[in-house]
Image 1 (spheres, rainbow, N blue to C red):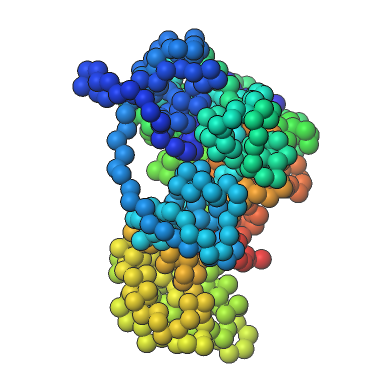
Image 2 (spheres, rainbow, N blue to C red):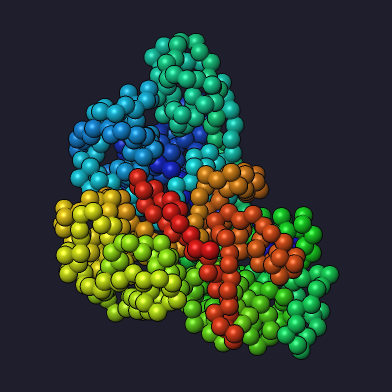
Length: 594
């Protein structure tokens, strides 16, 4: 299977473990730097982890490092000011784990161990540990917009924002002889690996060490090299078909539109370039799988940059009108233009990310892989209508106008949908008037269909003030997935009051399939799958199989697509909905639609 694009940018976030130890401070040109003296075994990977500074920043200040680190060499590390944090004690509760505590207090496991070295020997109920005072007061403020990826501590790749060098890291092992003064924790810090990985790699059941003991340690080897850019070729030799009939072909042609912005033109966004790279890698892995299954297709990846002019140029490319499938674009404001083009030229179009539901109106060639917020509210209403007949269903009217469409959608579906038996009563009230409906001994399910942070925050604050009238396990809050980005809502509130939301997909890095897929992904790209990579993999695998391989069943990573036509003249939308709940500060699937 051939692709046009031969180079992409990779930029993955790094896990932060600790601040640097003792190092001289110097000032040059008004900026402060640590003077790090390179020791035996130091690597660029270790420096970026030790000082919490991206590798490309270190390289920019020390160009000679492109040739490798040398013992005794002085490396300048920019100083990042960090405020001092007061510590308080916290009592460990039953069934709490290091991972759960790290999420609860929004710090890494290594940071938790650095505050409490005794934790390397395990965690016990009733144990007193040190935690940052501000985090305890908040009860933790973990950002739940993405599920924690368990693979990122092993392999990562970093690309300079100037696209001058390509830095990547790969695994290697060394043998280390334990010295008299060393502990498991000090060794983990020296080589920037976790205590758990050290114990696992050496088949240890205890963190106790003895002088002269030989440890196998997995470290990172970095590669720094210059990179080049590929080109997008022009296509030709297409013939036009007049009728809207999708015939079986010996070879199909697929276009994927992504805002790589390889030329770094005005208005370019590194963020969008990174997203495009993630999508490209996931899509490419899916195409490899499809090729093995017998799909014969030419797949063209077009750099659409970040403007409608470039989109128009791509659409006018010679032969483009004879594509069998177009995937993308990622930018919402450009989707309508492409959808109109596909309608005119009778080409299937797949929207791989969230889009405006209006794009499906009157265009039966468009397939949306992510349900709109309105559709999500409709599905939530149906789910609760059929699963919570004995509970109080309380619908909170939002204060912001933009969310009223969600409110009306839920209300209409809940009240008017077909239902056998006695329909549950729907209580409608306001953000300040729901207190009287909280009753002990009755499950109360609050539906708060708002996209506004202020409205959501006020509701949760009011709920916390009034919840004494009921047991917390009898209160359930149903918001929207946008709440994951609302920093003003305390995470303890979400955890205490059983926060739920509905989504078209659910990413879980711990399933057997996800672990296997990520191993392949790492082998191919020397980095780990992101949520967008998984979405790209699922979309390409499912749609190409459905359209070109007679609907051959595929194992997907985070989706279970059920594409239904909105109406006879409209496009298709994913009707498979997952109900997601926050439990013990983690996101889990608690239900799903048929």
